[in-house]
Image (tube, rainbow, N blue to C red):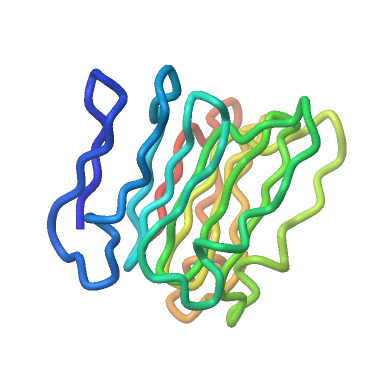
Length: 166
């Protein structure tokens, strides 16, 4: 399926809808609107203007219902949806993951030494990838095809700026 946000802050989804990943979009009460969206294998995740994460679709392994609770003023800044897990970055630069942990894609989040923090996250089939404030890329979880162990080496001052996982 595909998900998009309109200029009015609405989410529209189309494509496969077997588990309601397109048709069960939560209704928001204005002035709250959707700010970002991620389409996973059978679920959709989004962050609202109130910094809430909402997930809908297939909830197997808790990929939609086990959203961690944050203590204010920490808020959600980015969300990624994988095959069976969801990952998010908080305003404190932490990564939180929930859903399936079959390949340790949720439980093996690397520990960073401050002031380094996580800046971007991507969720794949059974792995998670992230970029840090130092421009490093870190990957954990399933490594059947080298998606975590075969990371290229960059020559400084080049650094990683974006990451995607499939």
